[in-house]
Amino acid sequence: MSEGKAAVLVAALGALLLTGSAALSSSGIRAYGEDAILKRISQEDNALCVKFGIASSSQSFGQCMADLADLRQRHVQLLKEYEWL
Image (cartoon, rainbow, N blue to C red; front, side, top):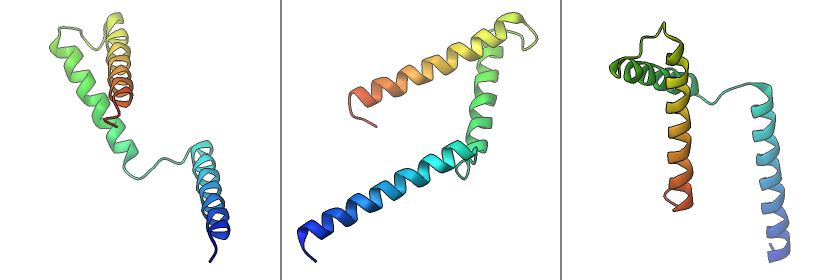
């Protein structure tokens, strides 16, 4: 197979993978295990907010959970900037 044909094949496969990934994302189907991961993150965040003395029934509890999600996102961004992810 010539280099040109191989490049076209690789590009076509890449486009197919991107299309499939976009279709799954827009369909609402989550990757295997994603629900379990999100549940565990929520449980750990909940426990941390309670540990810091913020009752789950308080108004500030939602803000605590949001702040932890924001912190996690900033950590991911930092790791990406330094190409650790």
